[in-house]
Amino acid sequence: MHTIPQPQPDARPDERLRLSPLVLGLWRAGRVQLPRPRLVELIAASLDVGIDTFDLADIYGNYAGEQAFGDALAASRVPRDRVRLVSKGGVCLVSDARPAHRVKHYDNGAAHLRASLDASLQKLRTDHLDLFLVHRPDFLFDADELADTLRQMVRAGKARHVGVSNFSPSQQRLLAARLPELAANQIELSVLRRAPFEDGTLDLCQEQHCIPMAWSPLGGGALFTADAPDMQRLRTALAEVGEALGSATPDQVALAWLMRHPSGVIPVLGTTDPARVRIAAGAADLRLDRQQWYHIWQAATGCAVA
Image 1 (cartoon, one colour):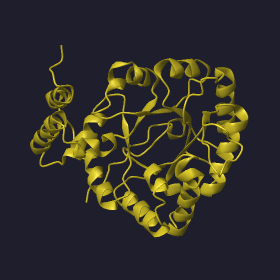
Image 2 (cartoon, helix red, strand yellow; image 1 turned 180 degrees about the vertical axis):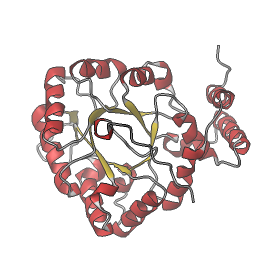
Image 3 (cartoon, rainbow, N blue to C red; image 1 turned 180 degrees about the horizontal axis):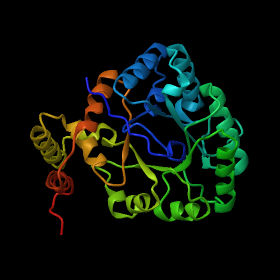
């Protein structure tokens, strides 16, 4: 069994967001309405290998995922200080659970985000989140209003840290101009979704010391299920690097490939299988050298770098 080494605290641990090197995402668990005993098992398996950070959102499981996880966490009797909770707000689904929503939309307004955070705290049975993220950029968001809203969440002690999700570099830079303490940007990133390496997203995260959290870090499973020749070429490269690293599995290598970036990418795992969580934890032990990293890049793009 692999155990993820935990980051060591610096001289001022309360001023810096600290997540486990990999995070367990609960989107899929909410979507399939994972039964409570399975959720308890998943929590235990994650903690056993050093994954103590759990990622949720108000909309997961048609607005029921946070409640299910909160109930499972209570049933597990894991102390609150052993876990780090991340949740998100700002997406408004058309749902029986939200009859006032006539159309799917985004809302980064103060009233909606505050209500979303308060509901998350209640459902998760906690008085604070370790990280609250604005789930999607509202095309109508007012940077001053949003910055003030997030700052007040921290001042009230309801969120230890705040950040964004799916924000473009320009959107992140705009908000950070008003709120420099943005702690994270959760983005789609994998060996199949490489745009953030080139569009400035990871550059900006590194510039601002903002943690990039990678959702769908294995391409939603397509990396290992698609039969196209380019996928087969990529799987071959992952297997070759894995063998060179001591029989690491291709999924471990794909995760370690992301974690190799100096911005400090943290993959958000989407599995509901405790066995897959245990395997994924081994990625934290791997360190690709530069040529191994570019070997995978070349396999993914189909050509050498210019």
